[in-house]
Image 1 (cartoon, rainbow over the protein chains, first blue to last red):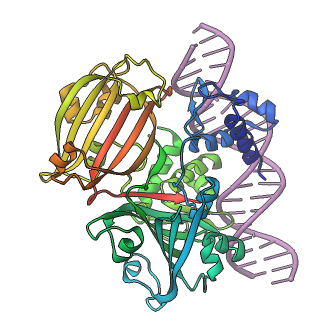
Image 2: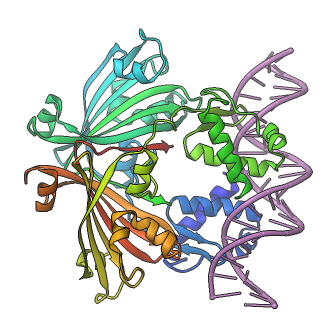
Image 3: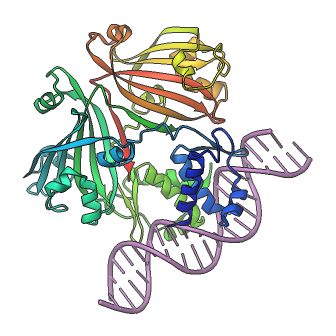
Length: 234
Length: 234
DNA sequence: ATAGATTTGTCCGTATGTATG
DNA sequence: GCATACATACGGACAAATCTA
């Protein structure tokens, strides 16, 4: 592992465990270079990571103040799969695969992405529930030229694990948007709501490291349980 | 202005104007050091900014690929005021101040932030509309120990401009969350909706540079027009 | 398949600028 | 005014990934 990553993790664990308590200053960058025996640039790289993850606030001339926000946040921001989030929070979740078949490219994807209009996609629909209550309906549209097939087992667990560990793909970034929308028939059926009700849909275009588009996801959430948190910087 | 900021802006404008077209590579870091006559570290700082703003994708061994996503995004992410966003998109908006008075600290703030329970807050309610249709109802709760008063004129324009330009405060970060919620009577009145309808509320705890909490904001949006976009990285 | 060139990533050391107390 | 702390910038070295001949 890289030095700045090791130092980041060490500082993170020390903040979490209270070695560096909230609203106190971290040791100065100069002191940290001595503690970890690295250059100041490396320390600063670790500190920048701590800042973007919401652990500290940097102030020129003063120091790096430990914040307590990171503990509270439930990071849906960034690309994380449902399974990763569920694992982190030890939720007991169930996934039911209700569709896994090949289709033509939907036109709304052709509008945005420049690909062969005859290319096939996999359409995957999965229903996620906690304590027998449906919380999320995931629609995935996946390029067969990148991922030829989704084994049922992978669909039941994590397709990201399948992409990354089995196929060796490296996911880079996603263009994500979300908004409220009227419930479709499928929403009504699984969320047990009426056609007049709304749901929140989180739609992502997901790209690989080499910038090839390979997946579109629409995660449909009940209004009552949807929540998004982040730390915004000016 | 700092060198890396100038270079960032120059590269940004060249990407936007098509000098560096989408899906081509930027000049290598080495070439850029010659073009701008700065060190490689400075160039890399500019490139990192371009990446976080979604203009490029970096790939070790290959180069920096120009993306076309940044053009589309409507960045509500980050701390931006309604007026800043409206100005950027040249929307014709109206703001009506319907409340501006002092109150005791609401208990839900005391639950989260450690402040004097007798401190007064300013409660500001503003209704934002576009083409005579109410789009947002903003509730602001502001610490009087930091900001003693909000002049009506500032409330009509931008309170952030007032904070930063008039009072010289520097806003640093916000802890933000949003979710759907049943409409209150005020929502019903201004959005012209029923008690059974939902709205989306974006709630922020906003902090100054020195980490003092100074403002809580709840922005209530119509379901139909709310939208949030971001670029997420793995 | 391999070697070499190119490009980005990491790390070091140093110097100077700027904000804070 | 002075010491301290973070911010910016420079230049150099080597590692890791990518591409090409």
